[in-house]
Image 1 (tube, helix red, strand yellow):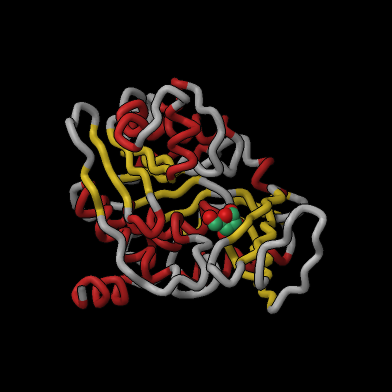
Image 2: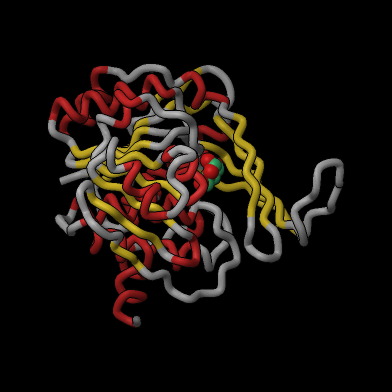
Length: 299
Ligand code: RIB
C-alpha cells in the first residue's frame, strides 16, 4: 500500500497584505515569508502526514530552493524520488489578504523541464497503490505517468489545477478527478450550468469526480449516480487557504490507500483541509494524522 505523487515543487514567497492589489496598484505587505510549496510537493507531504507511505517524483533546480524542498520532503517522511537539473527551482509569488483570500503566480523553473520519467520513476508508479497528479508540470509527463499507472493497475487521482483543456485520452486514464468549482465549470463546458450537470458531464470522461466548494464542503458523483453525495465543511476561522486544496487531495489519497470508500475519504480530507486553513502557508499548514484524528473525534 503506498501513494506516489508526480508533480511540481515550488518555493513559495508569501506576502500578507490588507487587500490584494488591483492592477496598477502598489501596496506595502504587512509580512513576508518563504516556504516549501508547489501543488505536487504539498500533496505528497499531505499524504505522508495523513499516514500514507508516500513517494514524490519531481524535478528541482540545483539551487537553495531545491535543497529547501528536499529537506522539507524528507522531514515529512516522504520518499524523495526527485531529480535535480541545472537552473532554478520553481517559485510561486503569493499574496494573502485579511479575508484569507489569495493570488498565486507560478514561475515554473525546473517544473517546466520535467518532460519525462526515468525507468526507476516509472517503476515507482507501477509499485504504488495510487498515483496523484496535478497540472503544474508538462502535460506529456502527466499523460505518461497516468499511462504507466493504468497499465499496472495503479489507481489514478488527477487534481486538474491549474486548469487547462485536457485531451480525452488523458481523462480516459483517470479514476478520480478532483476539481474546484471554477475548474469544473471550465472542464465541463458551457452546456453544463449547475453543479449536478457539471459533475455529470465530467463523469462522461472519468468514473468519479469530486468538486470542492471551499467553505461549502464538496460534492462527489460516480458515473451513473442519480444524485450528488454532499460532504459538509466544518466551520473554522480561516487565516490562509493556500494549499487547502492540496491538503484535501493528499489526505484523500492517504485515506483511499487505507481502503476507505470515496465518500469516507472525502470526509477525512475535509477535516484535514479545515485544519490547514487555520494556519499560514502551504506546507507549514498541512496537518499530521494525530491532529486530523483528534479533530474528527471532537466533531
Ligand atoms: O496550491 C497551492 C500551491 O500553488 C502553492 O504552494 C504554490 O506553490 C502553487 O503551486
